Image (cartoon, rainbow, N blue to C red; front, side, top):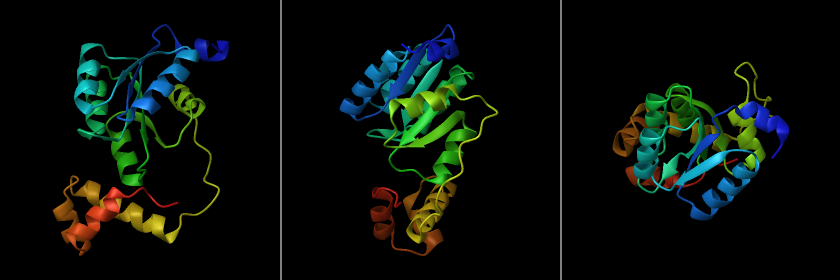
Length: 184
């Protein structure tokens, strides 16, 4: 265990990892344990919420899209039970709208997959007055379109039909776009 990390962790090193990718969450738990955390894992919104309410951790890493729902429900439960819990939302479907929603309900950071354990630890232990580095490149036109669709989707409370109406597009087309990963 790195002594610098151990000093930053404080006395409560509990960590809840919520991700439906069993292999990923197991590897991440091992990596975080090596860095001084005491991880517990959950692979669904239901189990994650139950664990968050029963024994609120000091730290959490929550995937946005889980098999049984939205990881933001776990973030809400964590923040309600333990407002000082440092939560990082991790997702392969990154969008500005969901990042803003995550931060509004208590997450301290939002990382796109693939993020390694060092990136996650840095996010969990970042001081409140630090700022992330500026991006090195502009977003592509496809990424700007994706971000706009995601923002409208969040504004419509993740209702596909209403989002399709707002964007004047076919519902099935929107569903296909939402199912894909975000463009670079």
